[in-house]
Structures are given as C-alpha cells and as structure tokens.
Figure 1 (tube, rainbow, N blue to C red):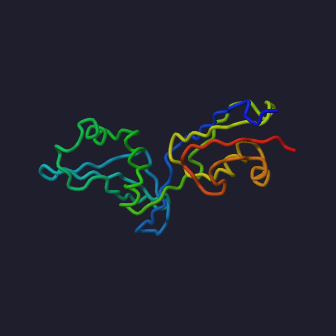
Figure 2 (cartoon, rainbow, N blue to C red):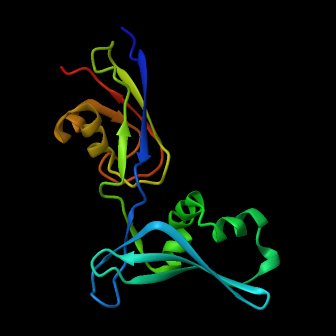
Figure 3 (cartoon, helix red, strand yellow):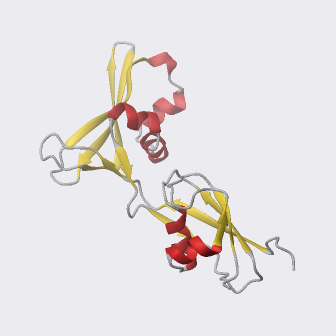
Length: 186
C-alpha cells in the first residue's frame, strides 16, 4: 500500500468581518476598538496630507485616529489610493488595518475572535487513507494548526496530535498556508 495521499482536500480560512483592535481607550480604559464601517480622515496642510483611519472604542464609542500617512506630499500618492482614502474604500480600509507596519506604528494588535471561518469541502474522512489537506489563508488570521485541524475534522486536539503529519509545529500560531496529512485511525 502506498504512503502517498490519495485525496487532497482544500481548506480556506476566510475573514467574515474586520477584526477588533486591541487598543487601550484613553477615556474608559477598555482594550477593544472597532473600525466600524471603516472611515478615513484626510487632512490637507498645503501640499502635504495626513491620513488617519478612524476607530471607535467598543465600550464608550469614543473615536480615535490611527496614523496611516503623516505629512506626506500629495504628489507621492497613487491617484487610485488617494481616491480610495477620500471615498472610504472598504478594501483599502481592510488592507491598511491588516498592515503589520500600521499596527506596530500605532501600537495595536488585532483580535480575530469571531472574525473568521474555516471553509472545508463536504467530503469527510470516508475517502481512502491517508488524506492530504491544503490550508490556504485569504487574510493573515493567526491560528494554531492543532485547533484549526480539530475544528475542521471534528477531532480532539489529542487525536490531532496523534493522527496528523505536518511540516510545521501544530501548537504554534501561523497565518501562512500549510499542508498536512491525516493518517488512518489505528
């Protein structure tokens, strides 16, 4: 019997909404904020622009600004990007919010709790063994592979550790695609 997987199943981790920000509110000291509908504020100062992403505290509704661009010459902006800031383009909001440099500069982290789902094909574990699964991330959702696999296969995490062969650590969060093999239950 061959040890090569007979079946390759595609799994996709998808964002269902924008994640919350772990960011302390200056007023109520809550540690969660939301981008709400996602709005930018663009302010011109001569030939320089400031661009902020507006966020709201989930507890007291206070608005704060995250610096996206500071004192940047107007001519250095791509016209489509500048238009996106002016019309609050949802995809531009998402790309800026998910930018690790913006998070570091503005001192926040993303809270992905309840903001993603795992899409798996309906084919279960009835296929020939072993089964190979390819996991793809549409957005950088940090998840522990053992928890993701347990959720997707309906197995306990102990069973995942026993039956899964993978080239990445199963207990360390990742947001990059990976492949694993499900071995038959012996």
